[in-house]
Image (cartoon, rainbow, N blue to C red; front, side, top):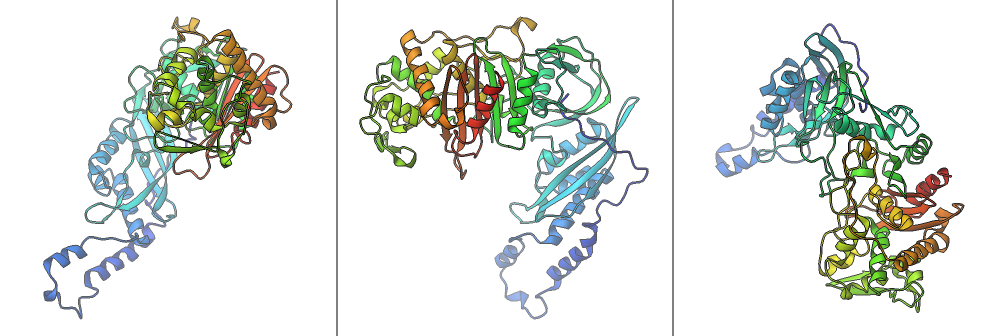
Length: 569
């Protein structure tokens, strides 16, 4: 399951470790000679203090090409010779390196490995690996590319390989290990809703999803395991739920990954809810857009019809943990309507600025709407229209609304693969106000926000699922209550107006029928552009997408979501 790397034939003899790196050994020796003798002929060593001499021994400044090349050569040569201690000593974390490099031969059963370095690019040295994996009578060639980075070690400034598990194999994260043996989980032949086989070759976005399905259903679907080399994730055991803490572009558990099959197992069969035509459309929409992710649901049931990620290494659509920006105003608006703090066609303040909890909030381009209605503020995505109601709210009001009505932030969804189920923490003062507009500590992904639109369209929360609960008898998550008829009608009017006349109008042009939408842009520290969000429904379809560092949601994520809604007919 998952992606498979092309294997190369085993060489009979081991080539020299490095071509370009070996060529700089002389330069490295020359550098060492200069460091040893240079400056000593005319200087008076007796005049130097011991402390000054010690200070000179701490190397600093940018690494030279010779230092980079010689350090890489030292590490790769020792590794190839099987000198684990020597290779580990060439890194800045010898203990961690020794453990993983020992497991490379002992647990992963990799032998006859050769490492060939490419041309260094600054401090980074790419290298290729060719080896053989052997387990009992099964053998298979292994070939892949990796890279290492040379840094100055803290304390003495000596050049060392910056140690991370990815040096050993690019699919490894720190804490992961490589293991070869009988697979713990048999392979799974996943089928779409029409009975067609789902493969990563056909749908590149689904590689991580297929890994997750195998992790969850391999032992339940009737298959038998084969022998394979796989990545065993560190701390993978647990309840299968995604972490609530953001890490990089997302958060959550990641399934073990098969790197090489030595002997094939017999796959079990597992049917999913994916629609082949809509999945193909989703793949097309995110193709070439690394930061794009999208999910399409059937609103009345929660069935996942399509899921796609432009970057295939992480399932941001299901596991992402990102601030949703103004798409969160759908949840906030439902709360304000219920509490009579807003009414669709009544006047509602939208000033340029509003201060609360020590923060001064403003709208995009600092606009204001004088004597405008709540409908106008929602459609134009006025931040201060929502922030201005913070003084009337309790710290836990938004958290309760998200949990009780939209089924979010309870960490109990059972989709069929691991998911991050949204996070709406109880906050106070300025952070509470920021959460009203999808910032602060609020975190979502496209699956969560598609579910929000689905809840509005269907009138009640239906937990999204990729594998029907009837397959394994599991219980789906539920929400404790629904919105009143009046609140629901008002919320649909707000989203419909936004799709027709507000910030979502351009993206939704040409999407006919019963539609509603909301745009969002989420500022992220360190990013030049915000993440662009879009959530919408059409008929019985609901979808949401994000384009990281894309800018305004209506311009980036909007066309992706709208295209899927159109494709749904």
